Length: 104
Length: 126
Image 1 (cartoon, rainbow over the protein chains, first blue to last red):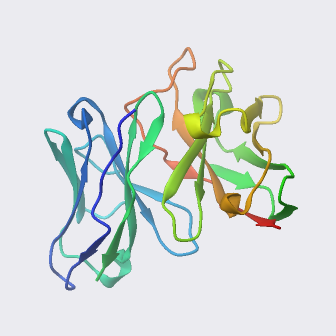
Image 2: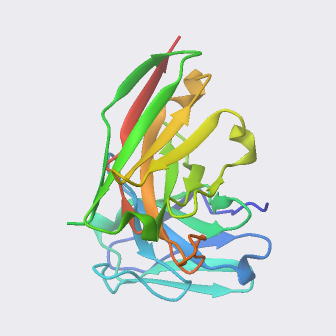
């Protein structure tokens, strides 16, 4: 099975736009999901299907995909968004990216 | 209330086994698969395995083959993770998470893991 590659860290100023990428072989053929993990808390699904977000997730979270790269975008980033973010896709096994630490 | 409630923290000696439970409530258990995912200190999320309670199908990562078993009891709506031959590298917080399955109990690739348990800390000592 393939691997998913994320940048280890992304830094953004409050109110600015944060973009976190996830790349992998044949990712274009798969649905990609994004999870937010804050220290001491369970992961939360914040975006899915490469196009949307679950109910209850703020509108500032969006996801997209181009070719074999998926992107999580947080528009108007807030301090509360500081967390680790992981992409995930289903394959012959379940794949997680290595995670990106977002600093606001 | 839709939730997954996991068993309490465990401390184990190296070489021992651990069994973590995950009890579902507020939803129909066999309409979902249960994944197990761990988060070790300084590491990223690692997938440990998956079971479809409806079909009984299981799937494990190659690196854990022979050391991990995931089971489910549909009568109680509880899933279990059994991890054997523990080492210090297995020290982590272990989570269960649900994902919808097809009417035949197959993994549904359209959906992500939308409900997670609160986590179970497993500490392995030498």
